[in-house]
Image (cartoon, rainbow, N blue to C red):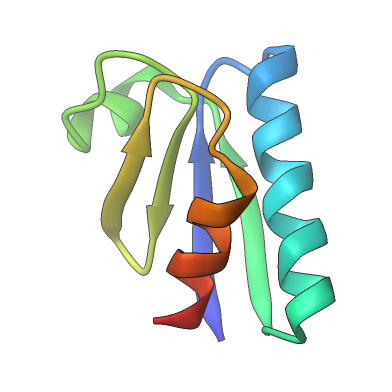
Length: 78
């Protein structure tokens, strides 16, 4: 199971990123746990300067925008 964190303020883009990841994971049959992290200290601990950001298994994989569906598929395939 992959542990995925969407880092951000809880804005619309952050919510869309989390929804997209959950949708793609369900389509591909990949077990994931998606959580939304809004604490500024936690977000800064990953070195993130723009949100939304995506962390998979404690590795920062994306920052600054809602990820593309193709990117999410690549992350989940690893």
